[in-house]
Length: 242
Length: 98
Image (cartoon, rainbow over all chains, first blue to last red; front, side, top):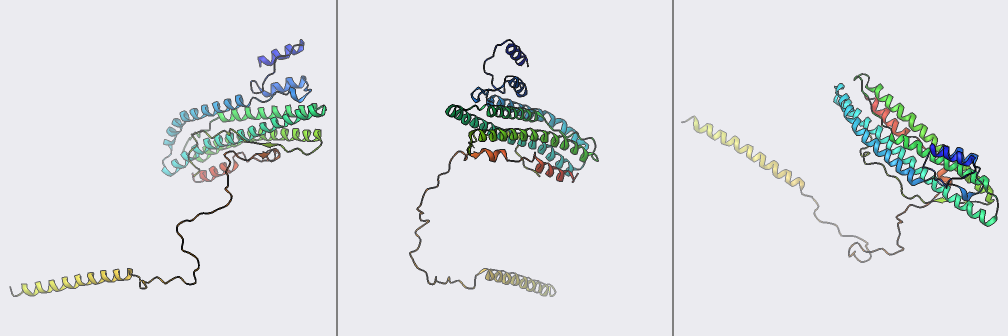
């Protein structure tokens, strides 16, 4: 936040700070500053610092695993309210599954965003080459790519926040156990939907950038993404669904 | 004394009948396990040499790449996510038993 303010002040006084990398601060803040500082060429685009973003994601994941371990003890204590052994087993399985679903979904979406980011990088390379070879003004493509980069970084931050969350069933009574499960399940579903929407928005923006690139080049463009360094699901997710 | 001898004789007779019955049932069970047709029929109309083992197959070798094939960006853009809906439905099924 401070960096953005400083950057904005320096910009107002006619100074320019060194090239920043997305992921060092909030992407939306970068987007707002880059909106005032209109992109002129594809070359001036700042790429997402995917390594930094991914490291933060992994850290939050690990923190969530540790937090869940701590919460598990209170969950086990609350299970004493349940007399039926079968119900106890079901509740334990559901509790494990809630954690797994969050881990699996955030990891899955993170990998998808990484691929999209590689796609944007490839598009930028292609646009840069075309800009050099043809001497055409590709500022509209640069703007689209910048918007796509911001959308990806925003989605990664949303996923990182989601990865940090834990879902623990707080059992009140045996008769109310179904409702208690429903509350945790509903919360997880709502949170995952928000993250999915953020990823969907990133996809949309990347699609728009691709469209802009195609129309600027004026011929079919095939961009392929080689998926490398897939993020794996943390070790806590081991058991399967009942 | 006169009474004891017939009793012993009767007991021995009954015991003998039981032992014989057990023996005969055992041999019958064993006989049922034995296949009636022990001879294996010879193969008919067979050509070629008998196999000397598993043999070998010639042809182009299939190379498996350690890295996955590249994916078209448009395919990635058009992908859809279910936000864990399938997994959450499985939870509903389990919760219904509570």
